[in-house]
Length: 242
Length: 106
Image 1 (tube, one colour):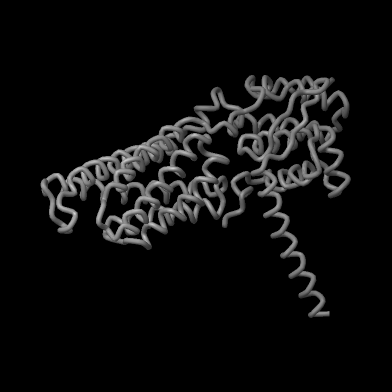
Image 2 (cartoon, chains in turn blue, green):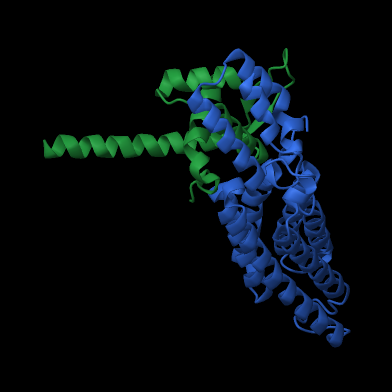
């Protein structure tokens, strides 16, 4: 009974989550003196390094997580502006560089460049902070996607598109396993597929018809969805039975 | 690639034992303790066991199942299984290198 009495040393939230099974364990296997000391140290650890928070959301959405999520949302918004403004004002497709609204195209270009750089920074932060979750593949995917976006904003062409497509494919699968829900991961995967498809569709028509480029408008919103999802705990980080 | 258990600190080794124990199927805490002692010779105290379980659960490497008579089983998630595989492969490569060096030196 001494072991079960020691259970009271643990925080309330911990006892609510693990108390019943812990007490059952101590009943089935009465603690030795060594185990008693281990239980006391465990209680200290549970208070100093709580693993069972007051709210799982508070544990998961730490300030740094919210900053990364915010950065992704802002970058997504800029990329949306880039695509929407740019495609709507492409002007005479036969005269590259010409446009009916050069000022708007400038805004589009700045939005796209800034959005790409911010997204690259955000994905680098995701890769460095969450590599224990998303693994080497996810980290490489994040870096590749970010680099591809920056490269594309400076005229990277096919190579940039392949970097974005391949990188996002790697990243999306691992994001879904740990950091975001399936809808968000599916959204960015689908949007990336459409971007890559649009590029090849325009190229297949020998760059005579830019209509498929309208699909680029979906890319930014997909990242906004990822950013919004990242602000809350992913389903498999929520404590079961808490 | 960084050690996926590195940030768990001093609970990294118990966590590895727990992941390995769950490798062949779900177990509750008592069964994990007994199994770890059987396969490794290491004694896991109840405090250490649950400190490690809490960390692994929070990181999504294990998940709790419905209680059975006040005993709650845990099982590996896909993330836990891949993490365990990576760690054990690394340990295996390390052991082979060490043994080969001993053999070459002897």
